[in-house]
Image (cartoon, rainbow, N blue to C red; front, side, top):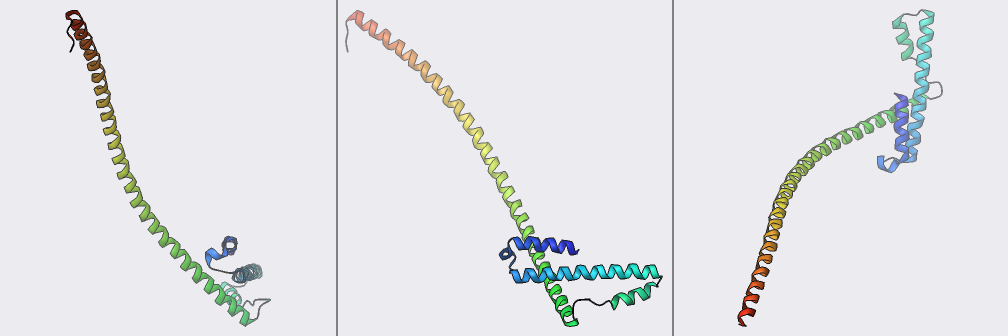
Length: 169
């Protein structure tokens, strides 16, 4: 758990302004994790030592509750505990904000996805309509070419007949 807190502090150290903390706060949290790691090590040593000596579980619990912090005064220990509580509360609040923000983002993404699907449907409908209109225009072009050819043929025939009859309009 302490290692995870160290990793979290390292992440926060990359961009302290994003997390709303300064270097003093980062250093305070690093000191707390070092102290806590030392305390955990002391507790582990105490448990192993008591186990090897054959003490009862209740005696071991009483001993652990009395375990001193070797390099801190009682006042410093209370400050560290308060810093720890503040850190945990702020991290908990931050995580709740992230979770709530994530839920809101999920809802917005769902709405965006539905909008994209509607736009996709409209786009497909427009595509089909354009293909149908393209076919109509192609057919119209073919009919125009055919009509132009027939009209040219008729005009040539009329011109030939008029030439033969010497009638000019």
